[in-house]
Image 1 (cartoon, rainbow, N blue to C red):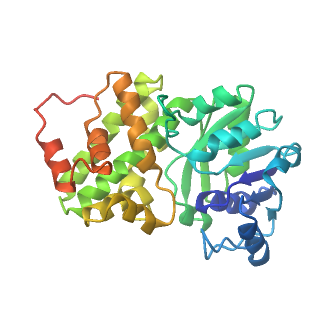
Image 2: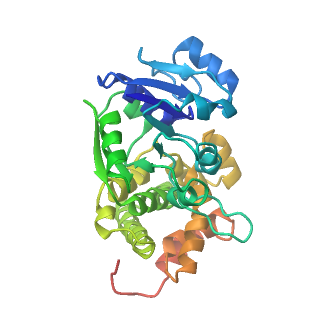
Length: 337
């Protein structure tokens, strides 16, 4: 199978390494927008900037091409993977809208709303700009560093297309990467978006040393918020008990390789949001998705108290200790999902 990964951040690079080295005989190409990064990767056979210490396997080649050249160069591929941040997904899907090749994206979150509009999930963006594209998402609990190192990982291949789901399994399933097919693209994307917001909250909780009881409560109620919004958007309830729901939430909220968790930890230390984001050097999607998650929920009349507290924290309306007090000071209610 011929696969091209567009976007050479940590996760795109890790997945390209996994696909090229899983023994399936795939020919894999990795493309970076930055020509200097492309040249460096081609020379070193490694992505020193985003994933140092993970050499490229022989079947992974670096693709040198301008953005406008990509549609023609990808026309004979079997699969195209968009590994850009969510902010660039619309432009990439627009570029590939006439592609005869199936396209899948890795980014998780909501697009930042423009003007008076609302932020959209990946499948909603695709429906707007590339409705004829055979498309889907690859998601689940996965840190790039561990995938590149060949540590056991399970992912979800989500698409309305049975053919694309099967192609994703064939492309990435291997000795250390297990891929499950799922037809609930909405639920998979909602899980991937909200878990980033909850990871910020859990990082804050742990940074304030509130204890393991508080962490468990926060993750559990965060899962309830995820399911509440997902069901309102048309997702299946069982999706949130799977890899892209509970699985990704637990990993991102508790694993210190999580950038979103690190944002919460740094805010608890007294850093400003800008200082926290700058210190990471990578995109933390939860920072940008939190507002859109809250806006989508308000428009649907859904209550998401943890999400609202994170938004107030990120906007500077609440200090870390005040955010905790606001959540704990809410009136008692029956447990519901």
